Length: 284
Image (cartoon, rainbow, N blue to C red; front, side, top):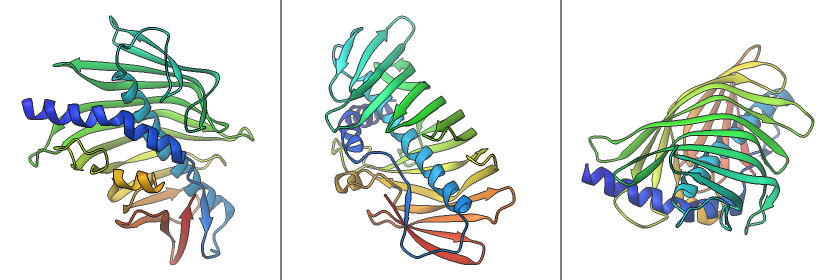
């Protein structure tokens, strides 16, 4: 238990600084073609929207965890790092991040709306249990829905892991179209860096699957075939995306998609396989 406690303290304490780096590079994951594919616009849009959702869910989780560890948390306190009015309900273990009608942080990222964060506290360790997004807006994209974290523990390699679920998480775009993840179940594992205080030596893997509806109203399922890996060191190079791993997307009426995030390098290049054809893309 002491090892779990110490490891988790280090990881959670570091989240404030890491979150600042994430906000510097933004969250959008639209793709820029390196090679001109023969795929339709609908094919490409599904890949873009899936990445947009996943990237911002990670940022929201970091923002929420960071808010739990701000020193002297009091109702009405404004955090310059997160840029929000923070209200802490100690009795009900609830933290509210209110970005109001528009709050621009030190990195120039504007956010609006509210994040309601429920947490648990065991041996003075606070962990985010549930995040509810209420018209939470970033760069003109509006997010609603619930993120649930549970089961913080260590495996037989002393690596911290936890479960993350999404429930009816949606992104509303400027044209009024909506991309929705109805349900998702993921496991997040800190594979490297859990024993140190270095902010940038953490590596973590994500596995799991999700189901939802595209902006065109098409049902899809996304499944991680091999663990998707993120490296915190990549944040210093402006890369918030996975460095390796593959995911398969099946959409009604369309060929299967396989996304390959590479071989471990900190870059924005990915490979998308649609049917028998392979395309190179660059995330921006």
